[in-house]
Image 1 (cartoon, rainbow over the protein chains, first blue to last red):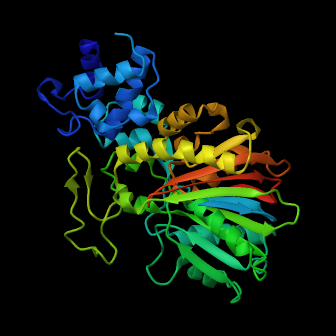
Image 2 (image 1 turned 180 degrees about the horizontal axis):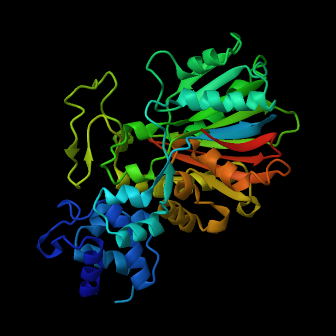
Image 3 (image 1 turned 60 degrees about the vertical axis):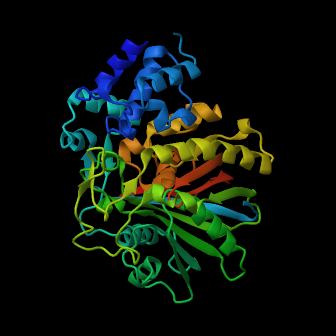
Length: 77
Length: 354
């Protein structure tokens, strides 16, 4: 799942160095626009619907945060 | 706060939009987006075209043109209404009220209550509630409500989080008394502790505009804007809408004792398609009953987006039929409000480009 998430992230912002960031949002790698795009890509890839209330920066700040978001919304590991 | 009104209805709706049209793909070229990335954003957010005014055009220009057309077409008489409400966040001036300017330009009677209210994306709802409250007065037979903005003039073209979604325009409604009108139910909430989520920091008395406030800076996300520009915390606004709107609608239906399935349409303010689809999913409403096509055609026109929604999607039906509709607006303030009413048959339901 980690590789899949990284692949999706690189499609959102190809120039961003996600591996060396501890907080994608705080470090400016993802803004709200990117979070929307990421949500859409994650929903398509994992065939889930992410709850609108989960659209908060902490859920998009790291690979682990995104993984937990996916699991919470029914993605299969 | 819950409201219940009887003996009042919306008699007509008219929308005025600027004819100048910008295209999303052109906007995004300025941000270095590839055509593929633009296409994906377009698909998810629903952005395509948006209408913005030419430099110098104000809310009163759109309002005067709209009212003049209604007068010329004999759909409205200049002396038939006793109150003129203008809800906008982009007034012509601080002093005088924009409603008075419109009154003067159209030579309307002096026995007219002119009132400006500062509201944004919830303006249509706040205006309808205020109009109904005014109609409780014997002296006020009819009210003309105008809501909308020319906020593109205060949005940085180099802010990709705001500029591509912004649209200008106004909606005009005529409200009147009618003993046979169905009851109207509404509710309204406000939370000023979250006011900074949508704000133009400079230009008022707290922080007057100056050469310093006009300097554009990177807000930390590669978007350039100045303190004179609209600042929108997109994530906070999105979360606010998802958290507050569904329970507000549930409460409204309970208050009105109305089963959900009796509602023909949910006509909501439209910030972007993504947000509305998430709302529809949360509320378990078929997206076909919650149109989300305003932003792709005209942009997010703030307080005018609900009348634009109505004129775009229901103009062919409303002159002859009535529909049970649920309206909702949510935005700056923060303010959120909803209303349940029977809409139609309308004397006019039209759209004008200027």
